[in-house]
Amino acid sequence: MGARYASGWLVASATAALLACGCGAAGNGSRGASSDRSVTLLIPPSERPAWIELARAYERGRPGARVEIVEGPQSTDLRENLCTASLLARDPTFDLLYLDVTWAPKFAAAGWLLPLDGLLSESELSEFLPAALATGRHRGRLYRVPVRTDCGLLYWRRDWLEAAGRAPPETFDDLLATAKALQDPPERWGFVWQGKQYEGLVCAFLEVLHGFGGPKPYGGVCVSARAPLRRTRGSPRPPFWRRRRRCGRSRGTRLRTGSGGGRSPARA
Image (tube, rainbow, N blue to C red; front, top):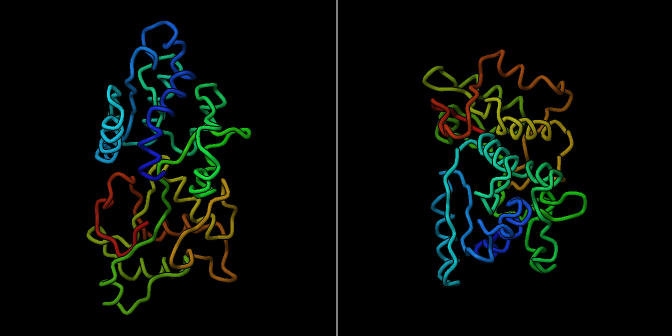
């Protein structure tokens, strides 16, 4: 979502979430937009600067409004657990829910969210990527509006590849061969990726699934200046991850570690 939409939507979306998730908070007087013009948003610590800027811009344009930014766990899975526990307990602490794409159907099906249909015009909705907007729909109703979107990228050390006389990989076989040739564990890993059992591993798997010709969930699209890695014609399909681990060419890492604990000529 562009900054002007994110700022303008901050309280409107939060109020809708409060009515569904606050479990009567507005009615019993303990909390609610009618008596308290403040809303609370749970975010990962790494995104605090961006959200603080949006919140303060909203407050400046609406005297008396207050947006409280609360830092939760950096891990997506831990934040989902925290939100789920709060909603199950009918706790009205959080008003505005910052949802990952996979949460919206579950939360909407549980009755924790109110539909947002009609709060944005068709012309405003048309400014979003269709696939990103579609992830916020459940049974034909809109429950989540994108604040941002991202996509998986493969990037590499250009100087290392040039020194070895290698071109950037265009197939999985190229990636494996380059990683094997340039690696020197534990100082240099051939390929660093999101291998921990958490939400990031699902994202990494879907990229490989797409590269091998598999379906794209939610009607996803690939936005890239280069074509995505593809399977070499005639090569077997599934064993990419298994081959990569068996050959010692990669190192699994959580997304939040960033560097993966070592240098690498290629990283996802």
